[in-house]
Image (tube, rainbow, N blue to C red; front, side, top):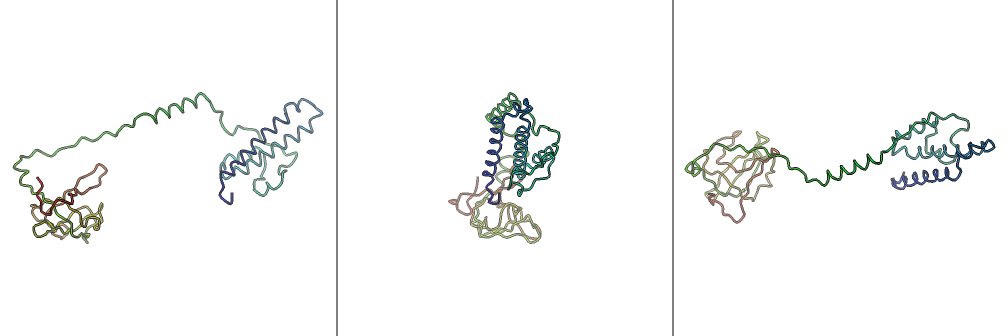
Length: 246
Protein backbone atom coordinates (compact mmCIF):
# COMPACT_ATOMS: atom_id res chain seq x y z
CA UNK A 1 0.00 0.00 0.00
CA UNK A 2 2.83 2.44 0.86
CA UNK A 3 4.20 1.92 -2.65
CA UNK A 4 0.73 2.43 -4.24
CA UNK A 5 0.68 -1.15 -5.56
CA UNK A 6 -3.10 -1.36 -5.27
CA UNK A 7 -3.48 -4.29 -7.66
CA UNK A 8 -1.00 -6.38 -5.66
CA UNK A 9 -2.86 -5.54 -2.46
CA UNK A 10 -6.16 -6.71 -3.92
CA UNK A 11 -4.48 -9.88 -5.21
CA UNK A 12 -3.35 -10.60 -1.64
CA UNK A 13 -6.89 -10.06 -0.35
CA UNK A 14 -8.33 -12.41 -2.97
CA UNK A 15 -5.67 -15.04 -2.24
CA UNK A 16 -6.50 -14.94 1.48
CA UNK A 17 -10.23 -15.27 0.73
CA UNK A 18 -9.59 -18.27 -1.54
CA UNK A 19 -7.37 -19.93 1.06
CA UNK A 20 -10.07 -19.42 3.69
CA UNK A 21 -12.63 -21.08 1.43
CA UNK A 22 -10.25 -23.97 0.88
CA UNK A 23 -9.75 -24.24 4.66
CA UNK A 24 -13.51 -24.71 5.02
CA UNK A 25 -13.43 -27.55 2.48
CA UNK A 26 -10.45 -29.14 4.23
CA UNK A 27 -11.80 -28.98 7.79
CA UNK A 28 -15.53 -29.53 7.04
CA UNK A 29 -16.89 -27.78 10.16
CA UNK A 30 -20.41 -29.08 9.43
CA UNK A 31 -19.08 -32.60 9.99
CA UNK A 32 -17.22 -31.59 13.16
CA UNK A 33 -20.42 -30.08 14.56
CA UNK A 34 -22.09 -33.52 14.54
CA UNK A 35 -19.46 -35.09 16.82
CA UNK A 36 -19.42 -33.98 20.46
CA UNK A 37 -15.82 -35.12 20.80
CA UNK A 38 -14.79 -32.76 17.97
CA UNK A 39 -16.14 -29.59 19.58
CA UNK A 40 -12.69 -28.32 20.63
CA UNK A 41 -11.50 -28.85 17.06
CA UNK A 42 -14.65 -27.13 15.75
CA UNK A 43 -14.00 -24.15 18.01
CA UNK A 44 -10.43 -23.84 16.69
CA UNK A 45 -11.60 -24.04 13.08
CA UNK A 46 -14.28 -21.39 13.56
CA UNK A 47 -11.82 -19.12 15.37
CA UNK A 48 -9.31 -19.45 12.52
CA UNK A 49 -12.01 -18.57 10.00
CA UNK A 50 -13.23 -15.54 11.97
CA UNK A 51 -9.68 -14.28 12.40
CA UNK A 52 -9.11 -14.71 8.66
CA UNK A 53 -12.24 -12.66 8.02
CA UNK A 54 -10.86 -9.95 10.34
CA UNK A 55 -7.63 -9.94 8.31
CA UNK A 56 -9.70 -9.48 5.15
CA UNK A 57 -11.65 -6.60 6.68
CA UNK A 58 -8.46 -4.80 7.73
CA UNK A 59 -7.00 -5.15 4.23
CA UNK A 60 -10.26 -4.03 2.60
CA UNK A 61 -10.56 -0.77 4.55
CA UNK A 62 -8.91 1.46 1.88
CA UNK A 63 -11.06 -0.03 -0.89
CA UNK A 64 -14.42 -0.80 0.78
CA UNK A 65 -14.49 1.13 4.07
CA UNK A 66 -18.22 0.74 4.69
CA UNK A 67 -18.14 -3.01 4.05
CA UNK A 68 -15.09 -3.38 6.30
CA UNK A 69 -16.92 -1.57 9.12
CA UNK A 70 -19.89 -3.92 8.78
CA UNK A 71 -17.55 -6.90 9.10
CA UNK A 72 -15.91 -5.45 12.22
CA UNK A 73 -19.36 -4.86 13.71
CA UNK A 74 -20.40 -8.47 13.09
CA UNK A 75 -17.12 -9.72 14.57
CA UNK A 76 -17.67 -7.39 17.56
CA UNK A 77 -14.05 -6.21 17.44
CA UNK A 78 -12.13 -2.95 17.46
CA UNK A 79 -8.95 -4.66 16.28
CA UNK A 80 -8.78 -2.81 12.94
CA UNK A 81 -5.28 -1.38 12.52
CA UNK A 82 -2.63 -2.75 10.16
CA UNK A 83 -0.27 -3.46 13.05
CA UNK A 84 -2.69 -6.16 14.22
CA UNK A 85 -1.84 -8.16 11.09
CA UNK A 86 1.67 -8.82 12.35
CA UNK A 87 0.40 -11.83 14.31
CA UNK A 88 -2.56 -14.18 14.02
CA UNK A 89 -4.88 -13.98 17.03
CA UNK A 90 -6.34 -10.50 17.25
CA UNK A 91 -9.79 -11.77 18.23
CA UNK A 92 -10.27 -12.63 21.90
CA UNK A 93 -11.37 -16.19 22.57
CA UNK A 94 -14.79 -16.27 24.16
CA UNK A 95 -16.00 -12.95 22.75
CA UNK A 96 -19.49 -13.11 21.31
CA UNK A 97 -19.84 -12.17 17.65
CA UNK A 98 -22.69 -10.03 16.37
CA UNK A 99 -25.76 -11.13 14.47
CA UNK A 100 -24.69 -12.34 10.99
CA UNK A 101 -26.18 -10.19 8.24
CA UNK A 102 -25.46 -10.65 4.49
CA UNK A 103 -23.02 -7.98 3.31
CA UNK A 104 -24.22 -8.09 -0.30
CA UNK A 105 -27.53 -8.96 -1.89
CA UNK A 106 -27.87 -12.21 -3.78
CA UNK A 107 -27.21 -11.82 -7.50
CA UNK A 108 -29.98 -13.00 -9.81
CA UNK A 109 -28.02 -14.51 -12.71
CA UNK A 110 -30.94 -14.34 -15.14
CA UNK A 111 -31.63 -10.71 -14.27
CA UNK A 112 -27.94 -9.85 -14.70
CA UNK A 113 -27.87 -11.51 -18.12
CA UNK A 114 -30.91 -9.50 -19.21
CA UNK A 115 -29.31 -6.27 -17.99
CA UNK A 116 -26.09 -7.05 -19.86
CA UNK A 117 -28.06 -7.80 -23.04
CA UNK A 118 -29.94 -4.52 -22.69
CA UNK A 119 -26.66 -2.60 -22.31
CA UNK A 120 -25.15 -4.36 -25.34
CA UNK A 121 -28.21 -3.61 -27.47
CA UNK A 122 -28.17 0.02 -26.36
CA UNK A 123 -24.47 0.30 -27.22
CA UNK A 124 -25.01 -1.30 -30.63
CA UNK A 125 -27.98 0.90 -31.52
CA UNK A 126 -27.09 3.86 -33.75
CA UNK A 127 -26.95 7.09 -31.81
CA UNK A 128 -29.78 9.42 -32.61
CA UNK A 129 -28.67 12.85 -33.70
CA UNK A 130 -30.24 15.67 -31.73
CA UNK A 131 -33.08 17.32 -33.57
CA UNK A 132 -32.01 20.54 -35.19
CA UNK A 133 -33.99 23.65 -34.54
CA UNK A 134 -35.81 25.03 -37.54
CA UNK A 135 -33.78 27.78 -39.17
CA UNK A 136 -35.69 31.03 -39.37
CA UNK A 137 -34.93 33.03 -42.51
CA UNK A 138 -35.04 36.80 -42.68
CA UNK A 139 -37.61 38.38 -45.02
CA UNK A 140 -36.82 37.91 -48.71
CA UNK A 141 -34.96 40.63 -50.58
CA UNK A 142 -34.60 41.24 -54.29
CA UNK A 143 -31.39 40.70 -56.25
CA UNK A 144 -31.20 44.46 -56.56
CA UNK A 145 -31.16 44.80 -52.75
CA UNK A 146 -28.42 42.19 -52.45
CA UNK A 147 -26.37 43.91 -55.13
CA UNK A 148 -26.17 46.95 -52.87
CA UNK A 149 -24.09 44.94 -50.34
CA UNK A 150 -20.41 45.00 -51.26
CA UNK A 151 -18.37 42.11 -49.88
CA UNK A 152 -14.59 42.35 -50.20
CA UNK A 153 -11.59 40.24 -49.23
CA UNK A 154 -9.27 41.92 -46.72
CA UNK A 155 -6.16 40.91 -44.79
CA UNK A 156 -5.86 41.47 -41.04
CA UNK A 157 -2.79 43.63 -40.38
CA UNK A 158 -3.27 44.09 -36.64
CA UNK A 159 -5.87 43.65 -33.93
CA UNK A 160 -6.28 44.80 -30.35
CA UNK A 161 -8.94 44.81 -27.68
CA UNK A 162 -11.14 47.87 -27.33
CA UNK A 163 -10.35 49.31 -23.90
CA UNK A 164 -13.93 50.05 -22.90
CA UNK A 165 -15.31 46.64 -23.93
CA UNK A 166 -14.68 42.95 -23.20
CA UNK A 167 -16.40 41.90 -26.44
CA UNK A 168 -14.91 44.14 -29.11
CA UNK A 169 -11.71 43.99 -31.14
CA UNK A 170 -10.37 46.92 -33.16
CA UNK A 171 -8.96 45.47 -36.38
CA UNK A 172 -6.80 47.13 -39.05
CA UNK A 173 -7.34 45.71 -42.54
CA UNK A 174 -5.62 45.81 -45.90
CA UNK A 175 -8.64 45.96 -48.18
CA UNK A 176 -6.72 46.75 -51.37
CA UNK A 177 -8.15 50.27 -51.29
CA UNK A 178 -5.89 52.06 -48.84
CA UNK A 179 -6.84 50.17 -45.69
CA UNK A 180 -9.66 50.48 -43.18
CA UNK A 181 -10.50 49.98 -39.52
CA UNK A 182 -13.37 47.80 -38.33
CA UNK A 183 -14.65 46.96 -34.86
CA UNK A 184 -15.93 43.40 -34.40
CA UNK A 185 -17.60 41.69 -31.44
CA UNK A 186 -15.46 38.55 -31.56
CA UNK A 187 -13.09 39.15 -28.63
CA UNK A 188 -14.72 36.32 -26.67
CA UNK A 189 -13.75 33.75 -29.30
CA UNK A 190 -10.53 35.08 -30.84
CA UNK A 191 -7.31 36.46 -29.44
CA UNK A 192 -5.93 39.39 -31.47
CA UNK A 193 -2.80 37.47 -32.48
CA UNK A 194 -4.92 34.62 -33.87
CA UNK A 195 -6.34 36.93 -36.54
CA UNK A 196 -3.19 38.68 -37.76
CA UNK A 197 -2.26 37.58 -41.28
CA UNK A 198 -5.63 35.94 -41.94
CA UNK A 199 -7.86 36.96 -44.81
CA UNK A 200 -11.46 37.76 -44.01
CA UNK A 201 -14.62 38.82 -45.78
CA UNK A 202 -15.77 42.32 -44.93
CA UNK A 203 -18.93 44.27 -45.72
CA UNK A 204 -17.14 47.22 -47.27
CA UNK A 205 -19.94 49.73 -47.89
CA UNK A 206 -21.55 49.98 -44.46
CA UNK A 207 -22.07 53.46 -43.11
CA UNK A 208 -19.35 54.22 -40.51
CA UNK A 209 -20.43 53.90 -36.87
CA UNK A 210 -18.76 54.36 -33.49
CA UNK A 211 -18.70 51.44 -31.06
CA UNK A 212 -17.50 52.28 -27.53
CA UNK A 213 -16.02 55.43 -28.97
CA UNK A 214 -14.04 53.66 -31.72
CA UNK A 215 -14.95 54.22 -35.38
CA UNK A 216 -15.82 51.14 -37.45
CA UNK A 217 -15.82 51.23 -41.24
CA UNK A 218 -17.40 47.95 -42.21
CA UNK A 219 -18.18 44.57 -40.70
CA UNK A 220 -16.32 41.25 -40.70
CA UNK A 221 -18.54 38.34 -41.76
CA UNK A 222 -18.94 35.57 -39.18
CA UNK A 223 -21.28 32.66 -38.45
CA UNK A 224 -23.33 32.01 -35.31
CA UNK A 225 -23.03 28.37 -34.15
CA UNK A 226 -25.72 26.40 -32.26
CA UNK A 227 -23.66 26.47 -29.05
CA UNK A 228 -23.72 30.25 -29.04
CA UNK A 229 -20.15 30.72 -30.23
CA UNK A 230 -19.07 32.71 -33.28
CA UNK A 231 -16.68 31.72 -36.08
CA UNK A 232 -15.15 34.16 -38.54
CA UNK A 233 -15.52 33.33 -42.24
CA UNK A 234 -11.92 33.29 -43.47
CA UNK A 235 -11.12 33.70 -47.16
CA UNK A 236 -8.59 31.60 -49.08
CA UNK A 237 -5.02 32.93 -48.86
CA UNK A 238 -4.79 32.96 -52.65
CA UNK A 239 -7.52 35.60 -52.93
CA UNK A 240 -6.09 39.13 -53.35
CA UNK A 241 -6.99 41.93 -50.98
CA UNK A 242 -9.91 43.92 -52.37
CA UNK A 243 -11.36 41.02 -54.39
CA UNK A 244 -15.13 41.37 -54.64
CA UNK A 245 -17.36 38.54 -53.41
CA UNK A 246 -20.47 37.88 -55.49
